[in-house]
Amino acid sequence: MTTTDRLDLKLSSTDKQRAAEAIQLNRALSLSSRDYEAFHAALAEPFRPNESLSHALTQVGTRVQRV
Image (cartoon, rainbow, N blue to C red; front, side):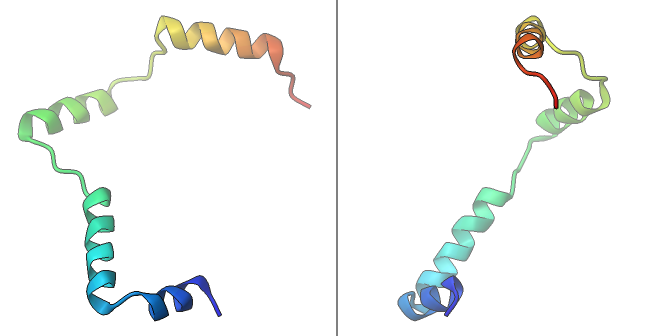
């Protein structure tokens, strides 16, 4: 018996519907036009690490060795 089969036995159809709706709400993201434009502009820009990330990458490079 799979996990899904066990959940099907324990959850009512209403509970399953509510769970599906909750999952969908967490998957979807709604943005205002202004926020969408800012998000899109950020994606279009080339990535430049900030000072903290650059420092962290330097530290990792000295502590971790690839095999």
